Image (tube, rainbow, N blue to C red; front, top):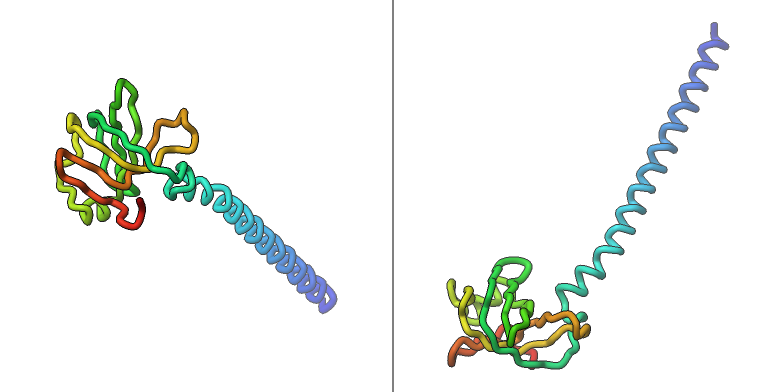
Length: 146
């Protein structure tokens, strides 16, 4: 009877050790998968929301706002310029407000002039706005950039 109890305890101990090893292995696998996922997503997010996708040089566009979606992470305007629709990234809500923009300033039908940095890929008609002009009013979104 004592030998049977000893064997049973040894088997239980081995079973617990095997389960612990499996749990640790699963946790490591999960952590590695999560880290890989973040490593793949972070550069795309940074490239989109930073300035890395732009030429680093300024250009000017003037046209009519066809669509405006303002909010986080940043506002997007669709602006028609000489028959071509450009996507213009404006600031986050707090940045637009700090620049002096009010509710209704950036709406469909408004004539706008924009100074900003275009996409490095010339076929991507996208501009990150640094300054906006509505009539004779100037709105500086990024005061430290030129």
